[in-house]
Length: 613
Image (cartoon, rainbow, N blue to C red; front, side, top):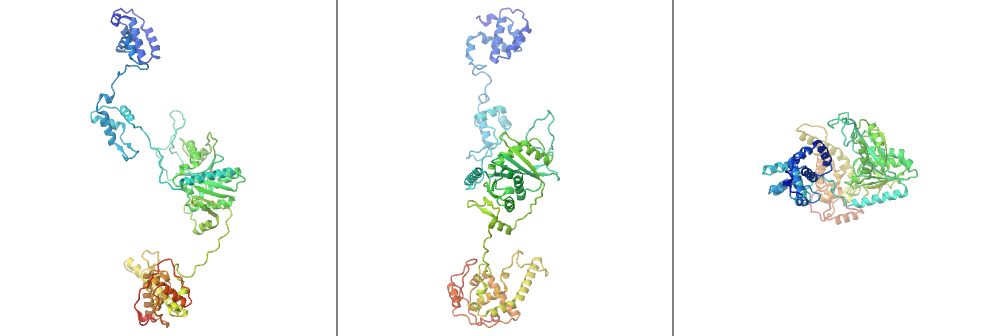
């Protein structure tokens, strides 16, 4: 092949440039950049002198490109320098930004470090700077770098653009895994016996009207579904509450759409509607039903109304209804979440729910390739939030209807269709204050020094004075709180809802406290233990009793002389009672009886309280 400089000396014969242009257009579609350049160079060499200009004009390429191709075509060594699959020689092209601008990567690392957030000692860190922010920061420091180059450098440094991954769990219940294993074992047991197993839960509430919904749907070009620009509801906007029942074994869904409150009554009624419409027909020989649900919402294991209505449903259907709750914080493991609700959301996507009929129709149209079919009904009943289940009702359920499992009975329990026999009635408590010795035991001459009739007469005489004194004290406290005035009768306590210390004793307690003090010379603390009150209450009661006896001139019957010496320990007090054929059992609740009684000052006329005042 002749030298390139010799070839360009030949005179180019005028050619049809239109024919060349047509040929070059076909070749351009099948050649890459290097092949196209060398091909144009060979054409120019073939034409001779003026061929470069003619080829450039016919192909639309630049003269330098055709010249470079001609030079490569004339140099066999140059053709072998470019590896296969490349269009340029190694090292050709524009230099990388990090090579052309020394120090760029170091400055970029410092910027990324300044924008990093999170605990540097943990594996969870992130950066708050965007690519454009980093580009502007680099420009201020004298570096020219576009956002695409920054993205490449960050990828090479181990960064990637990521969203958050919802995989971290909160505080785990220590028996979470055992509860999951029990639920799985129970489901297999029911399925093996042919009994129904359902997964229930409430779906997110939905507003009816032209409100936006996520997703996309096929529409004629330029005609999207028009909805409101904001999702703020109007005062008259209706909200529906879907409650779903998923039959695990049959792969069938059932949803009750209500417009009232999401309560335990609404949830149980949805189960009732499912049983009447499908369950009783599908499981005609069933005698029990297993319900799996999460630990919150209307089917919360702590809600009394949920349990009350399930007991009613068990009685109506004749089924043993067994309930197993997922541990708190694990509701997403409930099968209804990823077997039914996600598909309903897909059916509703990109379409507003204008009426409740639209919502129900969308649910009923939900199907999957795995065979899921759905049924939807409307529940127009009104469910009130303020429905309270009384303690008596709950006690009846616990005693006769509810059967709790030994392992976490708050999560695992069953309702019997036929109540158990009523338990034996509890024995009537002995008269007297809880944690105290009965008044019938203390009202004995061995403790009071007086006969029972004399004590009863003192109690009767003190009833009216004690009541009048209490009313007067209440009026005084009311006047002090209101800054003056007589005021109406109020409770004597400062908070107004608990009786004061002085009213915790009955009139009989007042008299017994005074007699135990005067006859046995007992200190305040032992008397308080015997009567089940604080020792300060005993001191106040004794003072008031003596004062009222003196003010109203109530005669005190004569009393027997006190024992000598008086009891000074709990054992001596019990021995004193045993000597009078009295079985005294000291209470264990409330205050603790001191091991030794403090010695009290002797009084000359112990049997006349007026003199002691």
